Length: 185
Image (cartoon, rainbow, N blue to C red; front, side):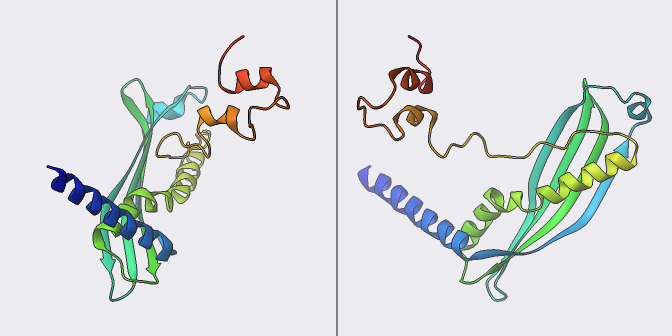
């Protein structure tokens, strides 16, 4: 049983090394809009003072890793809808091809992971601009789409905030420490 665990750990370390190699050798070369669709239901234009809720999705639809040409490409589909209840009154879809130049050989699985984790952020700003343009041209003024993320990330975890720059000495104000870590007097 120990052998299996060691093999799994060794494989994970190998995957991480391959992934990090792709990260260090991939440079964005091109981002192209390859398709779009926009649907506006008539009742969406009737009232401009609605409280819109957004439904957002993004997906890596297809990808290629061509070591001979030194390219890594991902085809992304972004979809945003303005919803009221269960009804989608405005829907925009954009398909983008993001191509990266590789300065070294790329492990295919690491390349796919890179596209799924990092590449998805490459074309999203262009989709946000497309959505804003299409809705504005249809006479609907909306706030910008929110940014996409992989979840909450901190440079330093919230628990570490009270410890930053602190050696626990008398120079640190005690009340500030308590507030920083969320404790009350």
